Amino acid sequence: MQNKPQSIDSFVPTHPLPGILRAGEATVQLRFLENDILGVSGAILVNAPPALLWHALTEYDNLHNTLPKVVQSRLVSRQQGSVVLEQTGKTGIFFFEITVRFRLKVREDPFNAIAFEQVDGDFSIYRGSWKLEPVEDGIRTLLSYSAEIRPDFFAPSFLVGFVQRQDLPEILKAHKKRAESLWKEQQ
Image 1: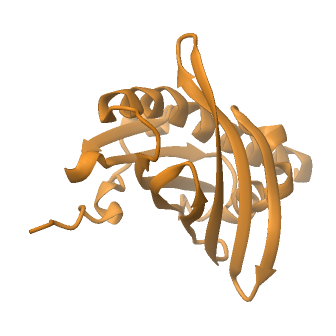
Image 2: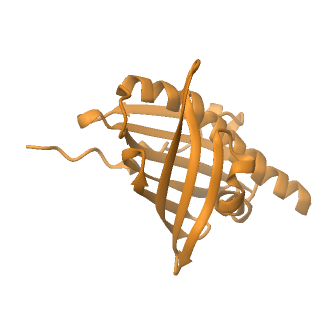
């Protein structure tokens, strides 16, 4: 009998905002699930309204210029809230780094959430979501990420977890930096 992995929604941080988020730092949590699936979640408080953070998250053709380790990001198609996106990135630890490629089907709920699932690529499982939650009367936004990951190449889950714990904070900080720079431009 095969158990279904825990819902990724259960990884989203709860309120009130922890001090680490108020200080502008990223949080990361890992869960080792059945069948070598890694559950990962993270959050960061962004000093910009949801609309500007949404813009930073969805400028798909520019993500390789704003996110660390993203080598290429290309919007393949867009139809009624559904997007197909291709990305290439670098991942690894220490001196061992590999290039990974994936095609994602993305569902957008504008200014609120982005759900994604790999439809082709180097992972047997890669699905998750980004959630935007306005805080402090919408002047700031809590950005939350949660995903389930299992590579289609040999990588023990503890190594995948190590890489996620290392890379996810940098990705969250990059989205924060981009959205906050857009906010400053509008001030």
